[in-house]
Image 1 (tube, helix red, strand yellow):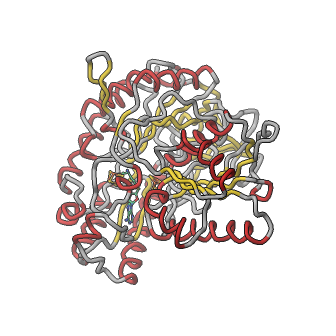
Image 2 (cartoon, rainbow, N blue to C red):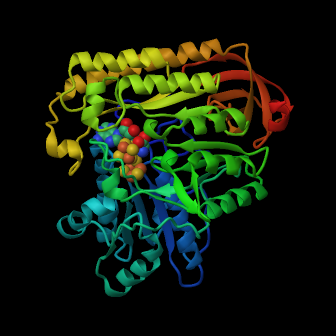
Length: 489
Ligand code: SAH
Ligand code: SF4
Ligand code: F3S
């Protein structure tokens, strides 16, 4: 699927980690569990990025330990939790719509229903949601999920709203094993850090998720190793800026390159991906790990945001157009065949036609395999909201975004066409969406491939020859089952 204009929910998962796919529908957890006697059933709806999806799995695990049951049917729930996203205005509008709907239900037919807001809107909107709009009973920020059982009990007991939006400098939930309710048993997310210190001018995340902190390396390795034991074939390590990961382990600093290297030693059959990385932290050491470790996928989501050095400066991205292009060139020389995706914002404050043209020319130069493309949406309290005027008219933003999308679609199609006739190792994730007679899975470079099922099964590595394509998907036929060890020889 190609990125959609106005995409205001970020790339949550399909049943597998899905770095290149945007969706415009919320996620619900893919499994039901019974409640312990007397305990209530919870329905969790997740908006936003993969971090939120991973957090919903943590929340499910925390509540499961207290005896709460989990339902996929909102009508069966005693507790409705919405894990929210604040990245663009539309994302927030959608959540408000859902909250109003649940509120109406509570008022009209289900007075005992508890409605909770989790995640990135919690911090920002707690007063409004609680006092002015009276939409919710519980508000819990991303660092306070351990407190959720207490807050739910409190509101049930007192009938008053319960709130904890404290942002922590330490919380990484390192000791908690997420329940993989949203997993296909093949690919899993592993959170390695929380928060962000970058303060890009347009971005609300540092305000909603707080300061950056890295999870201890031993607990990350333990979780990955457990996933290997459970038969998982792919992990995607997650953070807002994973390549600034840094911890002190026994007096020795472990950075992101070393962390990936260590994960790659766990199993020769475990593919490793990550999201998201910032160009300023993409070191040569990291590129060499891609080159030397066959299980570290040759794909990087490397958001550029804009093609003009002047706009990048206003955005506070800390690199120039030239530095970014040099990095792409260096990566391609160290890791031949590496694929890239990116994020791009159209219509940032003060963007001129000439500056917009620089985004198009950078895209032509890099030739990304995929991109997530957005119209700028001003967010309260950000540097841009305080210092600049959101002065590009909506119609101009839309036109520029449409030009960016058209160019990307053409590039994706051209690049996919060049892959026809080539063979790739695909990790089968499941049945294709369109037909039970076909399977789908990804190449090392994160390209989705669909091919006839024959006797192949999810979780297998299959060598596939590409015979056709669309701009979003490669089509092919299976040659044989394989392994990563075999492929690397
Ligand atoms: N931490 C990640 C991305 C987080 S948000 C990173 O730095 O790469 C994902 C994307 O949403 C951003 O890369 C950016 O392209 C987009 N985005 C963030 N704030 C936005 C805003 N105010 N308006 C439009 N798009 C925005
Ligand atoms: Fe936002 Fe920038 Fe941090 Fe990404 S790196 S989360 S865009 S502040
Ligand atoms: Fe949205 Fe929060 Fe993720 S604002 S993009 S859910 S970090």
